Structure formats: structure tokens, C-alpha cells
Image (cartoon, rainbow, N blue to C red; front, top):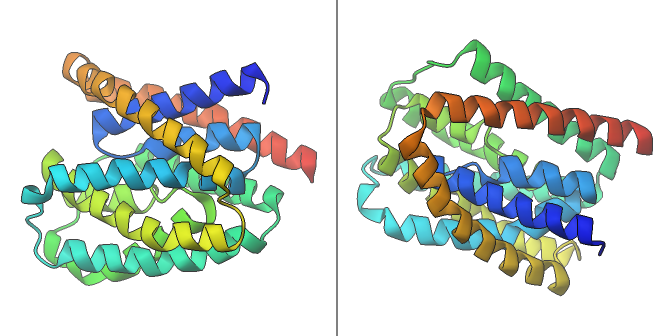
Length: 248
């Protein structure tokens, strides 16, 4: 592994941790596009599975007392688990170039929606009715491309939960998806011992980055921080598309 790649991987996990510390979620939004640029989508998804699981187990335990939506969180997480299983099958069999295009489309859809409907809201009773379907779709995206944020985070943000309540629900959702995703990735030989080792190191970098993200969000307007992230995402998506076209 070249030293440039090592630096980029360190930054991918660290900045992912910053995003998670600032918002409570969203680390894959930064890390997976960067790792996909260096390697491919299956490698990126597999490498980030262990950090995603461990960091969300910790957050789920820390914020467990803030899970105030009743059965909604469990049903949403269960639907995500089923979807992640379906999506992982796609990750195992679809061509890497096609997965790059899918990943790019997901992030672009997320960016467009954030711009067009920044204040979209959804009453909790309505969210409970559509939660299983949304959870399944988000889980499928997570399994196939490693990023469910365009659906999961947008949906949960629209319910207007408190920051602690949001983290409690979304961390449980990610833990549930990881429980089915990791065994399947091992079965299809996408999550190797080497990648799992890198994932453990990546977990440490995420935990190092999280306090800095919390500090940033306390010192700067959340809107400005969010705008910078969206610009970075747009640049990475363009690079990912060109890479996919070049390998096609």
C-alpha cells in the first residue's frame, strides 16, 4: 500500500469521525467515497463495516435512554437489517463500475434533496406508518453501496427528533444492519482478515475524530459546516463518476 493511499485512508476515517461527532451520524458519507476512489465500492463497504458497527454500538449504548419513539426504532432497525441483506447480495454480484455509478447517484440525490427541501418535516405518526418501507430501502442502499444517508438520515431528520433522540435511533439502525452485513461480507470473501484489521484501525481514527467534530459544531454554525461537507461530497462524486467511466 502506497503511503499516499495510507494518508488518504487515515483522513477518510478521521474526517468520517468528525462528521459523526458533529452530527451523530454520516461517517460513511465521507469515508466510503474516498476509499472507493482509491480502490472500489466493495472494498470501501467492507473496510468500513467494522468501524460502522463498533462506533454505533458505543453510541447506541451511550444514548439508549433517549430512545423515546417506542417501537418505531426497533421496527425501523429490523427493516434495515432485512434490506442490508438484500443489498449485500447486490454488492457481491454487481460490477464495481456499476456500483460506483450507483453510489454516485445516491450521493447526488442526497445533495439535491438537501438543497431543494432543507426544512422538510414529517409527523411521527406518519413516520411510524412508512418507517418499515423506508428502513428496508435504506438498508438495501447500505448493503449495496455502504451509504444509506440519502434515505435514513434524511427521513430521521424530518421527524425533528432531538439530537440525542436522533442518535439513539440511527445508531440502533446501523448496528442492526451491520449484524447481517458483516457475516454476508465474510461469506462472499469481501470482508477479509486484512480489511477487518484496517477497520479496527479505522475505528480508532473515528473515535479520535469524534471529539473534534463535537468541538467544531459547538464553535461554528451547523449550516456552514454542512455546506462545506456538501461541497466536498460533490467533488468526490464527480471524481468517482470519472473513475467509473474510465474503467467501463
